[in-house]
Length: 423
Image (cartoon, rainbow, N blue to C red; front, top):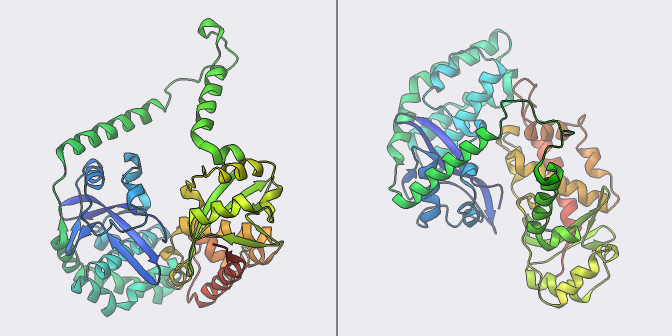
C-alpha cells in the first residue's frame, strides 16, 4: 500500500463533480493507481452525500481491492469532502495558463495538469495522453517559477498557454466522455445527506459568536464545574482507546518491497523503543506469529518497558488484537520512484510518515545518518521539506531529482537491513 484513497473534486463541463483517487500503491510486485469507476467508466457524483452513499453500498468497482477500501466504507462523511489541495478546476485551466506565472498560479496549473495526466494514463484516454507526450514542455511547470524568469522564461510560459488553449477542449471532451454518474441507494443517500447536514450544523456551533465564559466563573448547577465534565469526557476517550493506549505501546504496520511487517513501538520520553534489540527491529508476517513471540520471549528492548508484563499476559491468553491506527501505517515502497518526478508528485502524508519511521528507527539504533541526510541544508532535506510542506511562495527544488531519489533509497535500504522478519 502507498497512501490512502483520496476524495477529489473535478471541475468539468457538467459542473463540479466528486470522485475518489487512489494514488500509486503496491501489492507484492505489482504497482497500481486508480480512480473510482468500473472498466471504461469514471464514476463521479454531484454531491459528497451521493459519493458517500455509493461507497457505503457498492462493492462492484475498480477500487474494491484497494487495501483501504473497507476502511473507507466506514469513515465519517466529512472525510469524503475534498480539500482545497484536491479540488481541480479543469475547465478553468486555459484561463489559468493565460495569467502571469506567479507562484500560486504555477502551482495550481501544475496540480491540474498532473491530475489530468494521471487520468489519461489510468483511464487510457488517447487524446489526453497524446497532449502530454507530444508537448513535453508542459512539464516545465513542475519546478515552480524557475523556468519562467526573464525573457526566455516568459516565452516558455506563453508557449505552454498557447498549447493549452489549442488542445484543451479535446482533453475536456474526452474526460466528459468517460464520466458516468451511477445510481445510488435512495435510503443510503438520505442518511448521508442527514449526516452532512448534521456535520455542518455542528461546525457552526463550534464557532462561538460571543466571548468564552470566564473559567473562574463558577455558576454551574449543583456545584459541578466544567472541569468535571471535561474530565469525564477524557475518561471516556481513554476507555475508547483500548488496551494499547493503556500500556502505551503501539502496533505498527510497515510495507516495504519485501512485503508487509507487523511490529510494536513505544516512546520512553522522546526515545523510540521498538520490538527488537541492538538497533534491529523484529517484524512479523501475521498477528499469530507476533502473539506467539510476545508470549514466549523477553529477549528484546520492549521487555524493559514497565507495562510489557501486561502485554505478555494478554499474549499468553490469546487476547491480543492488533488494531493499527492510520498514523502507525508506514508505506516505503515507491517513494523513491515518485521523487524522480518532483516533490509535488510525492504523497506528502506518506512521505511524512516514512520520515518519522526512518528517524525513529535510526534513533533506536543510535545512528545519526537519517537526521544528517534530512538536514534542511542538504538537497534531500530540502526536497523532503518542500514535499511535506508545499508552499507556492517558496522556491521549489529543481530537477533532475536522481540524486535525491538515490539518497532516499539509501536510507530506506539501511532501514530494511535492520528490519528482520521473525515469523
